[in-house]
Length: 631
Ligand code: CUO
Image (tube, rainbow, N blue to C red; front, side, top):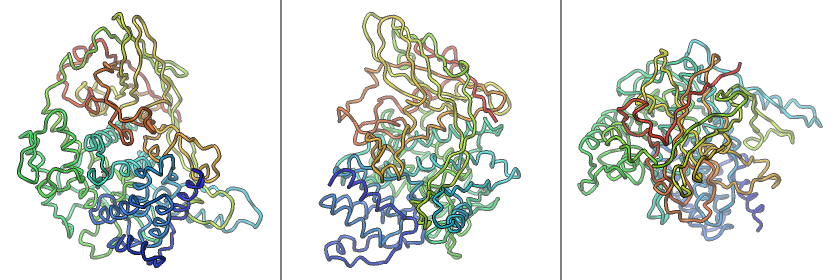
């Protein structure tokens, strides 16, 4: 079987999955029947699958293990084809993607973009129905594309609506879906024979960065930074998603304003409060207690990783019984706020699903609440010392952004399209697309001048961050306040010859972003495929959202550039040529160590008591830049 044949076999598993007919039985051969026996039980095919809900996660774990254990590639495809006819489609997509990602015989294969598979998780129901109508009234022989515009569905009565372009961005939601598949909370290191390096820490960092990016976007839009969720009895803001599950006709529920959390049948609000208290106590005592009552120190190297696993909580939690599952149940409690005990058999809201939860303003306030728990730990650590921050003999003497005008980046809204015809059969050979607005920015490059005052070549890690200069009232933010807003823009290795070095780095090369994607059509036709893209490469921040919006006047940002000693940052890699290292900062590297020994977010992950002048060592530089949004 050629790689293209294999790719086609994988694509078939995903084609029209959203509207897959679940027949409820396999009955093809006894062996397949036996292996799939009981798979998907407890998650009905019309339910909205949640990879935060323990019952759903367990069912998905069973399926991905069966698929992972398949004897050969053919056996894997055969089993998956049968499983597709008996389980919930989203559960199937999740489990099959986990198996694909980790089976050695699937290396080099891609799953299509999740937004093309489950377009109904990304595009409002009204747009999809319009597309059906327009496709169905096409005159026979008319091969022209059907393009339907996504209509705005909010008003200025809701100030949060200003951020809808960001929260409902197609690719940012796709990134989140893939991230939680690359790092499933049910990852079983013993079973797979390998652990995911610093998985708990990356859970903290990736979500911290999402919050920081959201706050940069809020300030860009003249809104105040978010107020973190904090009290379990507080009234929440409302949100209406306008999304329907096209296969089942069910929908993601709305949440009216002023609702408060209630006990669910499995977990009480009081449980959540207790878990938070226990976690806070562990942070204050600087140790957690494992299942055997043993104290495990929250030391500088592992503390945040241990807490990440505990708070999420994942299989790696040192004591799930005692510390519970604050984050995962938080998602479930919020998404079931309108029918907590299930008496109305309502469907949950978007917070239940990793492909949709970013749409809801409460996602960010809830994750800021989770982040504040991590910050409680981080501020308990000593500040970085001069020695830890400095890179002797290395000076950053200049840093600029090159675009049309130096140190000015323009952002603007553009139109983009999403192909819908792989998600549903519209009964036409023509393309059927949804058209929507999204943010974008000019391509630009960094020009960084670094002086190596030593007499030998040195290797450095260049770390680039960006944060707003002013708060919502126009006051200057202190460096310690900016810590929460600094967003990572890029991180890369560089060679420094003795004397002056000029480093030029394009925005497109960022270690945060996904630079390219293989679409369903490209994979299907086997043309114009980027062979370096594999499944793992689906994880990554959208490149069009690398730069915050800024404002019409031109908004001031601090560009922070730091060069650290690569010899101290490097990690022992398991591979000479690791797969897919496109978006390592938020997604890591498959089957390998996180490629930076420093704490994620360094040097802004710890308290900073000094002002700018004192904090900045010669290997750092702050440059004011302007981000201007063009109407
Ligand atoms: Cu990604 Cu709460 O973990 O959404």
